[in-house]
Image (tube, rainbow, N blue to C red; front, side, top):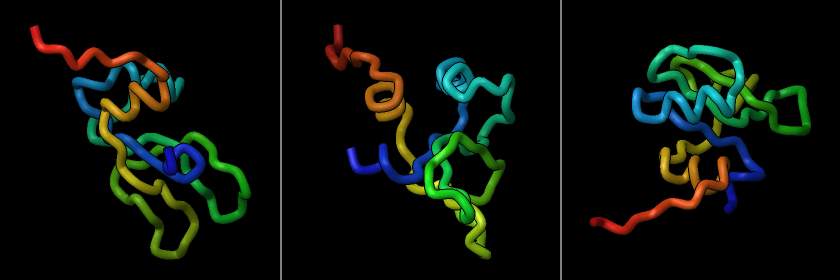
Length: 87
């Protein structure tokens, strides 16, 4: 997937809190925070990061990239098998 090598984020919700906080490994985070892989202006590589509101800093200091869904997060980041079958 394209966003794996580029900045991306997922919004923290009650539904995804356990998985996202476990992946981020920084303890309890505020709901609606954006958490993911960030591109900082002075670094070549992506690193884990979060913010409460801003996806991109207007001065270009950071970029949280595209928003991905919880399903995409589970499938592509956590590598979980998702069962879409409805019983």
